[in-house]
Length: 280
Length: 170
Image 1 (spheres, rainbow over the protein chains, first blue to last red):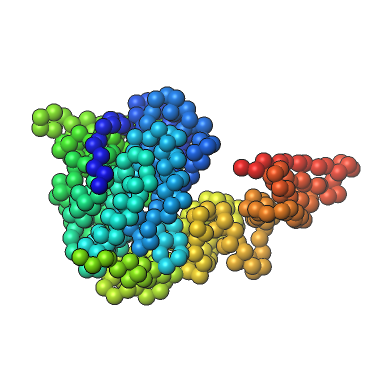
Image 2 (image 1 turned 30 degrees about the horizontal axis):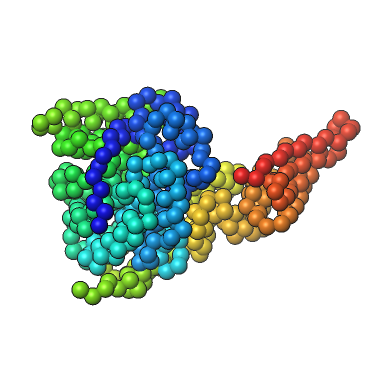
């Protein structure tokens, strides 16, 4: 068991994408960037990432293909790659998803949900332990947004995530947009769910944009952050001082001013929440 | 406690994947409306990535792009790398001659084929009509990368114009 303490203060961050390179290099007040590990060659870092390291920003590698929720054990080569990127950028931690990607020998290219059963939890814990053994730094796990739910759930999402974090000692990458999406689309209260996540184990927080289509909320990362998600940011920081909060934008990249405004809106929500925190 | 059943777990995941990506029947117990929405969303995401990587092809297919891509995606998985350029190449090939690609889409296809060519020499040529008549030759040479030459046909000014470009291996 690898129960790592959270020793970092990341502050405000953004998901690094080549299309955002210039805007992120100029953005004020960023403490960290997150890079998709699979898109990076440890021996040939993108210039924007190398420059960010020189400016003193933390860089967190974010894996998307380990398939920790899959039936197969995580691939050694993919783990070695994630480890090499983490070492190259001197990362305080790396993150991955509570999801499966390939199945039956076929790549889906998507992060698909796992059944919330004790059996799935056990397989997930085994896979996470294998990953932790192969990684040089702490691992944080992100719960995903899922339009489809497996039948026969034995617990709700917050309980499933709490069990997983407790059993593996991994940290939580809390994605407030995913939480919002699942609560909206599956008809439960986001805030009531939020308070039951293991908030004391947060490594950092994801916030991404989305849109409503036919009453369904889609976590697109291609639209502005909706007010309901910003409200969750505020509520979270009223409860706890999370070590970092990061904006994810992956598509339909906005003009620089809009990106800066999005970052500011998140920082404002953090500040409003923090002002209301008991004992702050 | 007995060891978890990884094989049964794998089979159930594969069955869900088939349903979401290829329109097969869902495993028992899934809410059909939820699963349909999830499948549509996943296929739309893949289609968008390909449309971004293949702007000329997307422009030419216009409103028919989504339906054609959906039909393709139900029979062909995305490449393991997830690379939309490679995915789009398979899609473009699946269209066959019926699509009657215009010049821009043909150039895009030729450049993508050169970029994705991995072993040995690749040389192809295409006769293009717009914006002017020319022969486009695209080659990918081991260690050198992709090279293209455009030779203008029957130029108004008399002499033949050659434009050239070179993109080094990435």
